[in-house]
Length: 303
Image 1 (cartoon, rainbow, N blue to C red):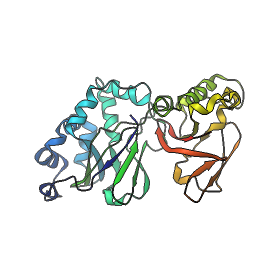
Image 2: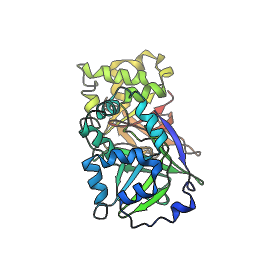
Image 3: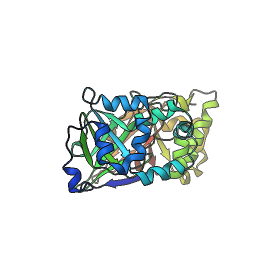
Image 4: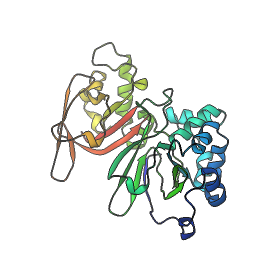
């Protein structure tokens, strides 16, 4: 599920570098890219996605498509529970939901790998509020170091720029799926305990309780590790709101020293940093940042 995967800038062979850039999406993929034919076959069977790509000259697009072998393995894997898992499971028999998944593969505009900044949050075309709750559409995070590009989402991938008329294809080494719920993602990252406490607090009567958390939009969660929840006062339902900040989303790029936030529990969070660039929330270090979820983003804190 959750992984970081590097993508090589030299993946394409010399023959691929010589492909004309004025081909349509259909011409490029069917004539030159047989190694992504399974993914593209699904797209050609989807009216919305195929029309979007056919009209790319008027509405430029960047799309991420999977190599055949990992796509086949992904098809054979049982989807997880949670929002994205519901979409994956239903998409087998539902053309509408399958179409939604293809929207998550697309970004508006042209985004060659060389245009990615050190950390960029890119908005996809996936904006089905039945499953995802991020204003304007669900995001992916792209970042780079001195030698390679990386993508950090619910599922990682590796890419190379291939141009067609009005668009760019990045070849991926694993299919991309929308982020999962906080609870599902938390099982992998060891933060499912606080996720469960936050969800349980939805039923509480007091003002510090969270209402309709699962369907709320633009939620930032500062999630304690399971090992930090031995303190019963921290783990109480009444304190759940102290870990949640409602919109706009606070990605790590917004967590600058001196920034202050008010939580759903009416407590204040104060951001500090140190000389090495580590980020602290009320003195607690963020040990894993920018974990995208179905309704926002989570940052793991140590205590």
